[in-house]
Length: 175
Image (cartoon, rainbow, N blue to C red; front, side, top):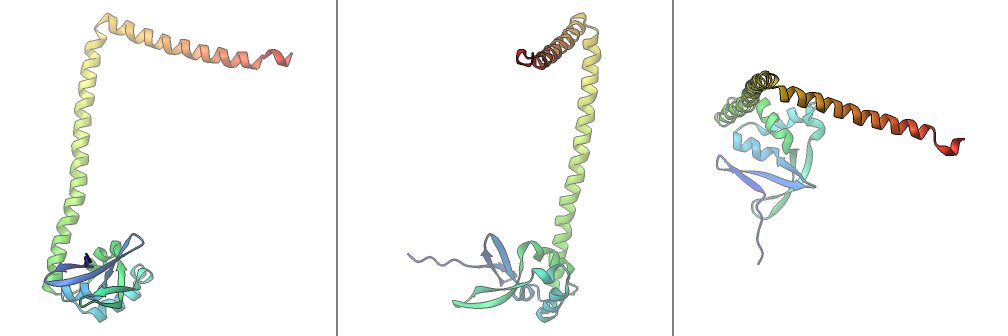
């Protein structure tokens, strides 16, 4: 059975062409411009002149609807989203994309800030609990004895290690 693989994404009733090459997705610029109702020629020129997008721009062979293969101007996927955000146009389709993009950015960064604040709060609560427990445990004589014995044990291991290293300095073969 011959199964045909589509290399496009439906967006606003239009097809955005892409192709995966060596693990990297390349997106057809013209199909994006058509889906967002922005001027392709203007965007093509701006991409070529951009110091980041220009060097990444490439022509790639892509399957277009109707079983045709064409060379299309493409950008790697990781640059497409930022490029779209940089387009200056009153296109309603683009403005809708930008609104959604603002929300995505806000949710991402606000989520990081909020999560970090939650972690700091949890850390403060845990530290307070540790301090309270330690205060209570310090009132128990066995706990103090436990800590002293633990420190003595660590010192003895250190002394044993130091003694072993000294013994190696005075190996019998050296005399």
